[in-house]
Length: 541
Ligand code: NAP
Image 1 (cartoon, rainbow, N blue to C red):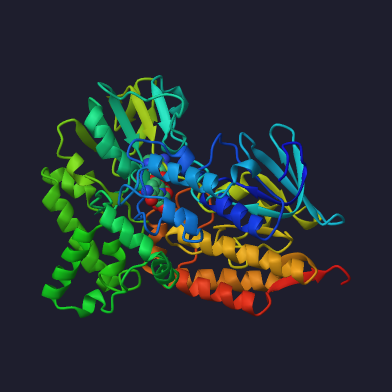
Image 2 (tube, helix red, strand yellow; image 1 turned 90 degrees about the horizontal axis):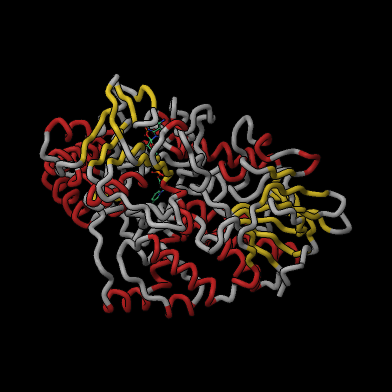
């Protein structure tokens, strides 16, 4: 067990969320002396920071968890179909306790820089509190939607009331919104979860909408004993099915395309998917909603119809209907009374697409010359996704090359795991890994990295690193796969998965849209074949 004074390790893992905890456990199992560093004061990563009202998973509990630990599977009992943030955080705390991980985690430790020393074949990580730690292997478990995006709106810093970003919600005190006038900017998954909850307590809620979303209701419910017992019994089978699914969920794969169904059948299937809720609508209704425009139009029309049926004021309903991009053009959020919230007298929708925000003043937000006075301003404005955490710190590879410079002309990775010029550096959920249900992708990723490291150690390989060719090949495949989908329209919809939500960020797919199942198979093939596409230098090479 490393002591708190130790500075030299086999592996350093950055981040103590789903990825970092799973990586630590897997490294422990192959006997690597590992330390995990995290700037937070507890485990959880995303689920540590995102404590905004309404925060919960968009995936159901039984595949938003790990299957690799029998103890955890059997001893943990979930309470809600879509667990709320405290429940997911408690789960990760349980994982850390049960797998004896806490002793190897240093909290309150912010990594500033990681530098590879070729002569020593080691990474040195320096932290904000002055520690310098070295290790052979460096793993990023920093998360994909973790670097907050605060938009550059004129006057934003002058606001005199309370202002919060959803992912940095105060943790040391309760934010009391009772009797207050609250403004929300941002209606992705975070804003969509927040709106109905804040609507219940705020005196007035002003929702500033630029792009409406296709929100599918999630129909949350309690997990009863019988359901939990059934899930526990079928964990292995469920995860096998998730690994064999394009979105890494254990869902039934539909056989029919929407445009091939009769109008009656289409309606019946859409209604059924809508009632089941959440990702079931997107993934279990028809097999071509992400690839065929005509079929997608049917789904988009269906959702718009649901919005018009739910929202009583026709003008508000029209504003909430996305019209200039298709369903799946942005990551569809799960709703919990979202559209219903607009039927409340204290909720006001303001269209900032046709009339953009003029400025933020000490009193509130000015749109088209009209001041909306606010006591609290909430930014649910998302993240510099996939690459943000990796490019905001200095990760310096061979010859002093910094990772953000390596990607200056476009992201290049080998399977989203490894980067040429950065030996023995691995990313869990790196850019160009699949667009999927993340805990399953994480479980696959940490397993693959642990196997690769074990292989390297067994074969005397000192440096495991992608070749330049393999990296280019994967970048090409990511581009090919993405442009074959409806998600390519994400550029129109400012989607984070194509980098369009951050002004100035290159427009390119930062996730793999070719299917998690295909990706997992490819990773397995690479491992089985002895890691072709990787430079693998042995000690006497
Ligand atoms: P997001 O999807 O990127 O949404 C950001 C929102 O902020 C958009 O509505 C965007 O409007 C708006 N915005 C950004 N800059 C703006 C500006 N200058 N003026 C006005 N509006 C602006 O971010 P998110 O909601 O945090 O979600 C990001 C991802 O995190 C999700 O897609 C999901 O993958 C994950 N997430 C998951 C969960 C869950 O599973 N439970 C919960 C939260 C987040 P435009 O669309 O017009 O750009």
